[in-house]
Length: 256
Image (cartoon, rainbow, N blue to C red):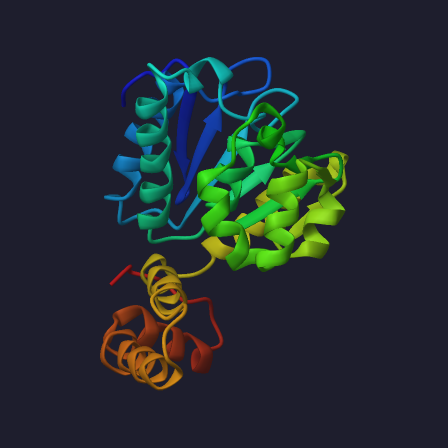
């Protein structure tokens, strides 16, 4: 496994932990984004993982993108590198979780909302304050309306306001808020619930949700029924799940 300067990858028991480690506040720069893309590329090809968790060292999850990388001579490379992060995160077939403590601002918030689930510590804060420096957040402009609706998305991106974790949960883009002293254990418990399931069925479940977003209902129900009947019901793991229920035991997943 390659050694990186700002990104760490730990895989254990089916969980891929991506750890940001660029002191002090894990501000993304072009080099760090490149490292993150390299890690994500590998994870898109890993059929054994059940979950990807984005974690961070230090007081902040990610406080944005380095302002220096917004200079005219660097901004094209920064945007293409960052867009690749969103593309690869979207391609990961298992649930992606942002485990957010501290500041999650600007590009950091964009990286978090690219994940399927955000779990936040009580003292985490969120916002898109780059408007105050003369920028708008490109990915948030696409993603936030899907999560909170157009009106609230415009408010978040236009005011640059900073929101608490509870505010973010009320708006709907944070799934769960944990007390700071219980944050790590609650993230781990959440992940363990996912990992109790078959890796194959986890993938099919996410595909069923994502492939039908925004589609016509009649087409969606036909497509998801086809996935259920002609793919899911022909897997060994689904048949094992049924068998284990009747035999009153835990299923032994085979990932096929």
